[in-house]
Amino acid sequence: MEIATETSTKALKGGEYLVAESEPKDVFIIGEFTEEQIMVIDSVEEFIKTRVVPNAKQIEKMDLELTKSLLKEAGDLGIIGTAFPEEYGGSKQDFLTNMAITEVMAEGLSFSLSFGAHVGIGMLPILYFGTESQKSQYLPELVAGTKFAAYCLTEPSSGSDALAAKTKAVLSEDGRHYILNGQKMWITNAGFADVFIVFAKIDGEKFTGFIVERAFEGVTLGAEELKLGMKGSSTRQVFFENVKVPVENLLGEIGKGHKIAFNILNIGRIKLAAGVLGGAKMANTHAIRYANERKQFGKQIASFGAIQHKLAEQALRIYVTESAMYRASRDIDRMEKRLEHEGKSLGEALLGAAEEYAIECAILKVRGSECLDFVVDETLQIYGGMGYSEEAPAAAAYRDARINRIYEGTNEINRMLAVDMLLKRSLKGHIDLFTPAMAIQKELTSMPAFETEKDGYLAKEWKMVRQMKKAFLAVAGATAQNLMQELEHEQEILMNLSDIMGEIYLCESAVLRTLKRIEYLGVEHCETSILMTQVYVNDAIERVGQHARAAVAAWADGDMKRVLLMAIKRYTKFEPINTKELRRKIADHLITSNEYEFRNKNK
Ligand SMILES: Cc1cc2nc3c(=O)[nH]c(=O)nc-3n(C[C@H](O)[C@H](O)[C@H](O)COP(=O)(O)OP(=O)(O)OC[C@H]3O[C@@H](n4cnc5c(N)ncnc54)[C@H](O)[C@@H]3O)c2cc1C
Image (tube, rainbow, N blue to C red; front, side, top):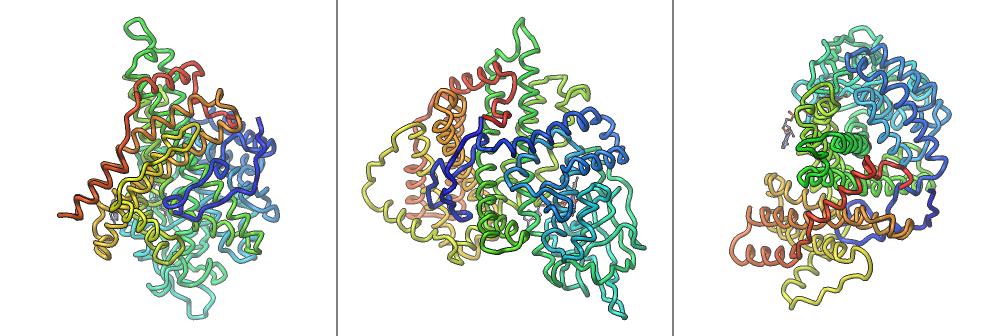
């Protein structure tokens, strides 16, 4: 079913969700995809199911010729080019469509990583930062899948601290080349890539991007890494020994390599969330199907409460995280279109939009990857001994999932980034945290006002979201005011604050999405999503309380501590619902439909 929705919805600024309220119409629900978008997404799904999945076992044996030929097929079918303009052979779909494509791609396992690294971190730097001649020289073959790309940022001694790279570039005496020396590590697609995006410091100082061809003399590769998972994806070291890189291959501006590296990562993070949610839906569906088939004690294991709890918890975490992922994707999509309309170039528009929502991208990277890890772990558990066997899909999924918490910025780095970016945006006046934080301080010193609930569905949950925001503002405001510059050295507190930000974003997104679904599909089609939202918010407010108390206890004492703990108690107070019963109902739906229910694009 295609849903007609109004386009003039209000977009909050990045991070503003913590101090302002959105409405259901502001978020995206999957049923809003148009027929044309669905056709594109379906064609990618068809390719994955018919060409990649049947070859998965061979791909996992590191058959790179097969991976290359499938990438070429993807190029022929136009699947590589969905984020690239027609002039380079692409078909430039909007951001939301590309997110859905990333999601369905997940079924391709290692192939998806090769594909994702090629079209994402490999090709996007050229599209967004390349000169016209660099774009027309490199993009058509990369879009066609006749050449392949890789991205070289990490080095043996610089991973999270990427700007500490040692790879060095020096201008040759005749001024025609940069002479590149150094070493990169963990480079996805290195084994077959023709084009490398390489970050090096000019004269050991100015961090800069370069386009380096595999064919340039002095480029060599290390052996394939023996990895925990993603065994069909090529990961190698890349060495540069006096490589002559033509000056025309300098990417972007001298000394501005960090702009390329970090902006591409913003997009990478939200795309990672789409990919992991695709994987999580698959894993949940495997778990449901196995639980429906497997019998113990004369019954299907799906009939046991302990298993139903797991199936429901998997599904509801996916639902809630997906609500946030599509909400942020729509915000980025809308902002990209607005910036293009204002005359910004393609690159400036998408990068500007992703930068605006960098806080949300960081949150989604963390929450998406942790959702997937939880889901695959429970799938393996539901499979019992079979989960430990290579015969069943759970073992590979368990191994493959783990990398997502490490690359595109580790989850520790992304957690801290989310808070850091929020405080910086507030200091720069992009969003006003101060006024609402002061209002809460005032509220705390006055008599508690009678809090009204909105009418209608999920009124209680919506109120709980508002209360969580107040708890965050009370704690974050006081913590930032008291610790000031010291806060950046108190990582444990930053982690607590970041986790509260994540919970609020997910809870609110789920409430908004469910309300919008009710409005457009009718409440009779939304029972499971209502239950999922209720259970998640019920449990999340407790976690928010825990994080908030831990943050306060880490630095406050005396009256300050008492006041803040009182505030947390007031704003995270809730009457627990019977989550056991609600999870059983959610599980009933899953068991009956024999799949993750929202996998269908029309729901
Ligand atoms: C399969 C795979 C594919 C990859 N593909 C690519 C690729 O294509 N291109 C590329 O450039 N890179 C790639 N990487 C590298 C990846 O991005 C890095 O591994 C990642 O950024 C982490 O860097 P690191 O491994 O050096 O860990 P480190 O930075 O050494 O981190 C080790 C631990 O310390 C923590 N830590 C680090 N700094 C801090 C801090 N300031 N505060 C608190 N904790 C901290 C980290 O969170 C982590 O838990 C890939 C890695 C793998 C495993």
